[in-house]
Image (spheres, rainbow, N blue to C red):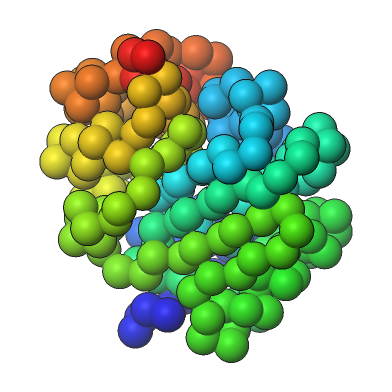
Length: 224
């Protein structure tokens, strides 16, 4: 696990706000529906799921994206195992993650074994449906050494205005280099410099309607 834990304040005693980045971990409207709109729909999931499908993520946060993915996987009754690798510099303590997931009891229940493993100092968890890996540290340093490749990326760092390091051209180039042919990426942000960085990394990029109060988001696909 990482040497530095995230510290949060709470909006209405339910939505965690990062003290380091002064940004909420998920939408103030409905975090689970935001995840489904941005990261599942944005990557054409669950339609593309197959045994061994690999999701990679920048910013594990509360784990809500993993929970939504695993719920979609099980609901789609996909045979085999979903692979999920997440890069996180400042993991949330288990107690804060559980509190953040309290409004989403189904997500909280499905994620509990992973949170238990992380609280015990483990960086991996496997069961009949999932192989999960957490890579701690600065993704600008750790992603280049990753030997895997993703079929779908969830780009979920804090706002580019507040966490620019996780949206740099260099890091987006590493995302592109660790994406399988025909693979995709999605993010809630529609910032022009992020879209240009994804284009430079080899993706075909489009702006689509965002979730809730956000007018636009970004989807990207690496040519097959």
